[in-house]
Image 1 (cartoon, helix red, strand yellow):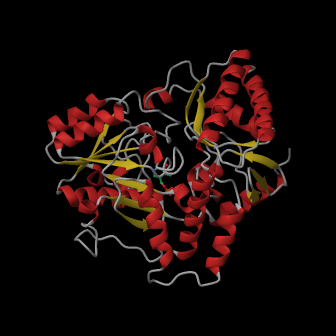
Image 2: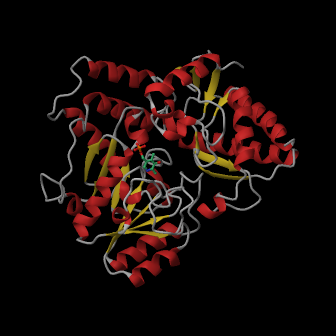
Image 3: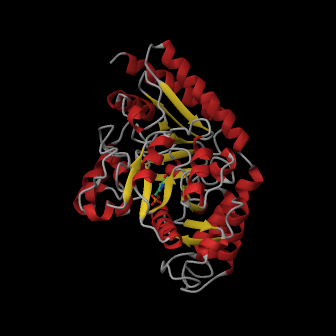
Length: 429
Ligand SMILES: *Cc1c(COP(=O)(O)O)cnc(C)c1O
């Protein structure tokens, strides 16, 4: 397999782009080698600029849940394009998408559209503070909530449990109201409530997806919600990754827990830039123009992006692919585990519906600390072997693999073969 054109573009890109990328994980830093440049994609497949074909298990980190260039999405976006790109005024499409979203989340009466998951979460946090009149927010180490200052602490970095900024350029003052707890450990949340009386809420990825996939144990989320109610603090569900993916109603529907504020992104735009945050009326009425919490956006509710979202979610509802995701996911999980056993490679596989990933470790992985026991060098070898055998994976041990509804039984066979070859190579290290 040749990467000549990708390598050429990479060198060219270095001149005027930072690291030749616009988002760091695309730089392949944690797996070595140069990033691939993509030319096009269709259905379950993606093609790089050297003409190599891959089965795509990245799907843009989740949004392309129907596979690439789904007919009805493409048609809807083209139709919207003909009417103009942006108006700085409201359109009917926003009302339509808002209804689909609010119907999917029973506790959500109103929603506000923004342009990214980062924006959705930073607004959701502001709203929790506006509603409760309190400043502090608890987050879990290993959970990622976008790149806003206040939440760039223990966000999949090595600074877990310390309230220190996980990025240069984030002043300590910006994270002084951020408290860190451990995933799957309610006591670590309670401890903060004993020490502080100004906690507005707790933000969580209801299924962890940014430290690799980490699953909430037993009744962790339910108990967390019940506990927060006794404290008058809000549960903020960051469903940017899980919304419309775990189930149509997100992880909340799957796990039977309802959050006070829900943040959405990724699938909601079907590949176009859409984020959203929503809650019951009593909470949302704090947002301008109804209330005193300011939040705005020149391109928010963009008509092309709304068309992408409406058509993606409508098609998703029609297809109802969640049982199929479960089926395909469990097949891949078994293949990973059996192949690892066959070649004597230590492997843990975490999976929740259509999100999964293998960790090269003996340990069980239930939190960020355990995720970090994974041998990332092995993952790097595994990653490149998968690429060479026609499977595009996220270039990081700590990113989830995402299924899409265009994956066929034939694709599964190709993935299985690639896993076998890659695991063999890893076993020879
Ligand atoms: C991707 C992600 C975000 C950030 O969304 P962007 O669109 O990249 O800004 C926030 N929270 C979670 C859980 C995510 O997976």
